[in-house]
Length: 441
Image (cartoon, rainbow, N blue to C red; front, side):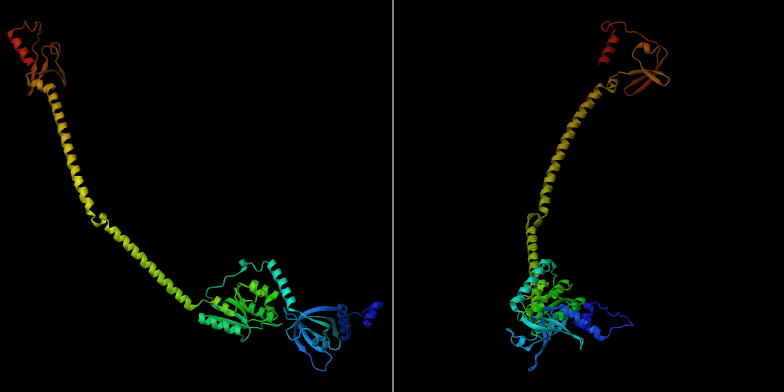
């Protein structure tokens, strides 16, 4: 144990630390070394980014990097560990190492001294990918309802791919051949190795913030399982789900299926297929427009022909071919009905006229005018403005003023006296009998 450790074990007091009593560098370095020694031996997983193996040296120097974060750790080991590895180790290899951290107090650096190195095989990588796939599926990140629709004709396409790669060339060539006016915002990043995920995440965030970018394409050519590992990274998958811009995944070839294909809004089998999916084919669209225009014109002509035939059929009907025919026929019928109605009216008027004449003759026969015309008279006694018909000799005493109405007028007279009829008609004198006969006539 160190001197400080002995002091701590024996219960010696640690010197107070303050501005007046600062610790010297050696004390701090020793304390850090003590704390790191307490960690003991550990297993660490990472990706080899640098490897310095010089002939004749007893120590090999490596840099082990976290594939999902911009963090690295210095590693030292016996060169024979690298030479005797069952799988050749090189920069980019995924490994699991066992060793102990050491703090070099002279330089103030930390290094991991390893005594065992195990390359991570393809089977183990695939098993980890499957476990991550099950986790993301359980969280619902593969749900089709989360997929954002890709616009029919994007204004600007964001492209994340390797610099001067075949994937970049395929996407640009095919897209511009299909739609020459398409615009691209290209972000070149590493597409494999330990720096791929941080660079892709940075480019993805920058394109997602740009309001002019309507769709983002992740494009990479084919490769081994190790080469495509960055596109199955958990951080990248979650960043794709969190993005607001639709993302198209075009990684590898048709058999390749990294996890970003499952969380992306659209999966393309190849970069060429992605170019065909993000922009329409101008020639095909023009042909479609021409076809729809021809179909619309044919439909319009067909509709006009059908309506023309319907109008011709309507015009050929008798009611439209000779519209006055029914009017003429109805005119004859109306004239016949009018004559019949007049005949009936004349007959009715004649019958009623005859009835009226008979009633008039009856009224004339029984009326007072006819009686007066036969020589009778109506005698009225005048008393002031009142007139009373004289029905007996008592109604006209002597001296009464009388009004005698005859057939052609009236005579004013005065009653000189009265005479009662006491004799029968048979005993009356010749003059009275003549008067009675005249009255009966």
